[in-house]
Amino acid sequence: MKKFLDKDFILETETAKKLYHEFAADLPIIDYHCHIQPQEIAEDKQFDNITQIWLNGDHYKWRAMRANGIREEKITGKSSSDWEKFENWAKTVPYTLRNPLHHWTHLELKKPFGVDKLLNPSSAKEIWDTCNAQLQTPEFSCKGLIRKANVEVIGTTDDPADSLEYHKIIKDSGFETKVVPSWRPDKAMAVDNTSEYNAYIDKLAQAAKMEIKSFSDLISALQKRHDFFAEMGCKASDHGLDQFFATDYTNEDITAIFSKVRNGQELYDEEILQFKSAMLYEFAVLDHSKGWVQQFHVGAIRNNNTGMFNKIGADTGFDSIADKLVAEDLSKFLNRLATEEKLTKTILYNLNPAHNEVYATMMGNFQDGEIAGKIQWGSGWWFLDQKDGMEKQMNALSNQGLLSHFVGMLTDSRSFLSYSRHEYFRRILCNLIGTDVEKGLIPYDEKLLKEIVQGICYYNAKNYFNF
Image (cartoon, rainbow, N blue to C red; front, side):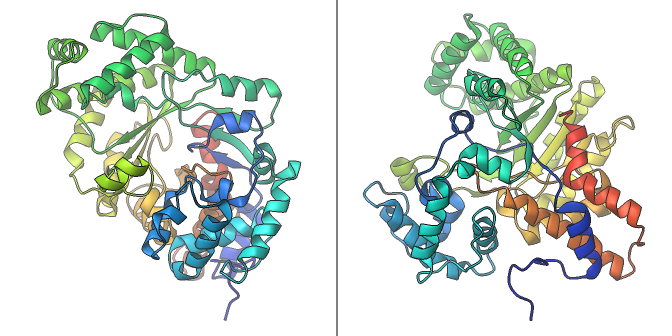
C-alpha cells in the first residue's frame, strides 16, 4: 500500500517518477491566467490567518461545505469568526475523499506550510496555529509565497477600464516575478441589461478620456485602452462566454443597436446576439493587431440559485456546466477571422466534457502551418480541473492533435496557495507519459521525453505568450 501524498504521489511507474523528479518538478511556473488581485501583490499583503488566504472567496470549498451540511452562516457569514469557518472546513475535508479538494487541500498544506498531516477536526487547531504563525513572517507575504512557489510570470484578469496602477507599482518595485495584465472585455459586450451596460460604457469613456456616443466611439475607446494595456505588458485577452457568438449582422445593424442601447432602450434577443457577435469579432481583430493570445472560457451556466445570488452575489459557488451546442458558431467565428487573415493565437477552454472532441478536432481546422500549436485547446478548466478531467483532456488532445505543443497548466485561481495545482498537473502529465512508456505504447527516448515534458510544463507557454 502506497502512502498518501508521498514524494511519488500519483506517479505509478519508475519512468513516471524519473520524468517528474528529474525533468518537471523544479521548473519555474508560468501562471498565465488567474484571478488574484494585483493590489495584494503590490502591497505585499500579509494575511492574518489561513481562513483569509485559503477559504475566503474559494467557492470550490464553499460548495463542498454546503454539501456536507454546513450552514451558510458558518461558510460565508460575517457573524462567524475565521476560526469557526476553518473548523467547519476541517470537519468537511475527511468527507471530500475522491474529490480533488482532498488532494488540493493537502498539497496546499504541504507546500508552502510543511504540514504533513491530514486535516480533520482533531488536527484542525494544531494546523491552524502552525499555518497562522508562518503567515506572520515575511516569507509568507504575497510576494514571499510567490517566490516560494518559483513563479516566473503571473497573468491577472483585468477590465479595459481598470487603471492598472498596481501593475505599475509592482513593476517599479523591482519584484522579480513578472505580473502582467490580461484584457477581459466581457462587460463591453454585455448588452443584456441596458442600464448596467450604459453605466459601464460611461466608466470606460472616463478611462479612455473621451465621449462614447456612437459605436465607432466605442471601438476607438477600446482601441485606446488596448494600446494602454499593451504598454503595460499585456500579452493576452480572456473572455468568459456562455457560448460563442456568430450571428450575421451589418455595420448599420450594430450602429443602430448601440444607439438604441445608449438611448436606454432594451434590445430584442436577436439584436443582443448580433451585437455580441460584432463585439467578439472586434475584440479578436484588436488582439490580432498586436499578436496577443486570445483565450475563451466557454460553457458555464451561472448564478443558478437566485435566492443565494441575491444574498451573497456572483462567483460564490452556484454555477454549473451548460449544455449549449458550440461547434457551428465556434467554426463560423474562427473561419471568418482565418479567412480575413485576422486569427491570432487562440486558446479554447470548454467546461462541458461532452465537447472534448469537438474542441480537440476544431483547433486542427485552423492551424496555419507557421506557428506550432497556434490554436490550443486549454487544460481542464473549473469542474474539469482535476485528475480525471485533465487526463481525458490530454488523451483527447493526444489523439486529435499534438500534445507536445500543449501550453500546459494555469491556476485560474483567486488564491496565493493554488500554485500546487501546477505540481498536481505535472505529476499527472508525467504519470500519463511514463505509464505509456512502460506499457510499450511509446518509445523510451529520454532526450525526446525530457523535451516534451519540459515544454508542456514550462517552455511552451513561455514561448507561446512571448513572455
